[in-house]
Amino acid sequence: MTLTDPIAGIRTGDRKTVDSIWTDLFPAVRKWVRDCGGSDDDAKDVFQDALMVIYDKAGKPDFQLTSKFSTYFLGICRNLVGNLFQKRYRRDVTLSDELKSIAEEPIDYEVRDRKKLLDNARKQLGHDCQRVLDLFFQGISMVEIAASLGFASEGYAKRRKHQCKERLVDLVRSQPGFEELLYN
Amino acid sequence: MDHKDRIDDYITGNLTPEQVKIFEEAMALDAGLRKEVNFQRQLHGHFQDEGRQRLLSVIDEVINDQSTGNRQLGEKPPPKFPWLKWTGLTVILIVATWFIWWQSDVKPKPVLPKQEVGFPPPPVPKSIPEEVIPTESGELRAEVEPELEKNEGLLAEVDPRDFNVNPSMESLMTGMRGDEVDITLEAPLFNAKGLKSKKGKTKITFKGKVEGLMGQGINLQVFSNQDINQPIATYPIEILTNEEGSTSFDTTFRLELKPGLYYFSLMTSEDETEVIIGKFLIDKP
Image 1 (cartoon, rainbow over the protein chains, first blue to last red):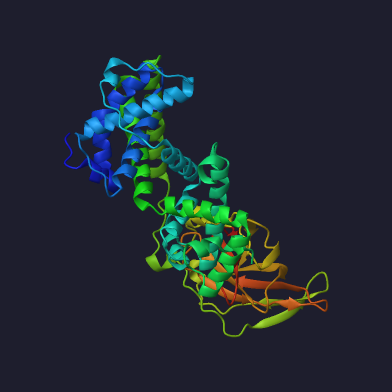
Image 2 (cartoon, rainbow over the protein chains, first blue to last red):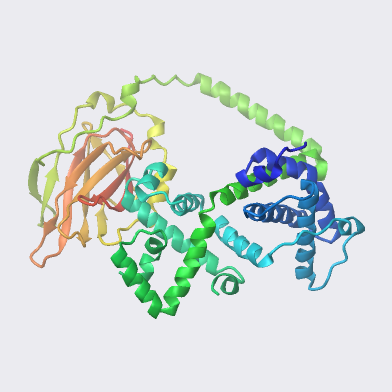
């Protein structure tokens, strides 16, 4: 399937875009990861990270896609695969000729790691807490949060938000690398 | 209030200019507070990006769906005992057939008219008809019988749906305590069961100690298990103050409720803050 504007699809969280990228490009990513001795879960992590890196890059005003999307996506993946196994094996990994033929796209790993840490913490929250905090961080008032989530009162929404935020902060602080990524 | 409690309000611009000034003066003197504000700003900045959260959940969905699909396309090794699958399916089919046959043999349940399923919300009584009766311990307590619309004809009807737990309300029951007001509930017991109705009315006592009310009262709200947004009844609870100034309540209601599971909330009367949420079950007759 050829997408007219995959970057816009990524920015808007379009399901068809993500489906299409998965169908067209994930098999290549999985093969590279397997060639390096990684698992299918590693490949899925790389796939997700690549999309999130593109989401962040594409949000910058000076972003311009200068190659085909597939080339750009695989260039990001090449960088991520190299980084993943370099960290895991603590040495440079030998990339296959196929992977070497892809031009690597640069990634700011400090930004990537910081955002990933926060996303991982959020994922560990219960569904209810995620919903409360999503609305809170979007600036929705407590009265509206209570109405939207079916809470009996604004007071309860406030307490729930407080509990959920405390939990989120605890989860963030329990992540490895928290101090250097977020507390400097 | 601790400055740390105000970080959210400071970041979201919900402090008055005077409060901002005080907060920023505190930050200038406290490196720990500055660090915490910086950290919390990063949290706000990251999580207020709605598109990012949406994309993450879409990726999760796609990975989960597609991974399942890939396995169906043959990535998973074939089962070692394919005959077991067919035997299992046959057994399930036989059991399902028997179950359908058994269900069809059961006398069909009478269909209630729509208005009989729900329970009309009674009004908050303006004045509580009260009868003070001595308890076993010799103390005095109020016995309240709210004036409700009569529905005695409905009370014999039992709908199994009225006994289902409500997951939303169950999740609210965890960790519910007021920040300022504290209630120690002695009755009804947490998750009270076995309440019996007599002539369509169920006697239920709300008893406990309460602190931090600051002159407010307490209201009892009762919710059906199927609609937690709109209470089916709201009643004021009388607060008793003893000679030492301790406050408590001990009120018995005779509620006209059909058998089923009910949730209740005790909330402060003025700022309507929920202090405690519980549930009780009225048995089938």
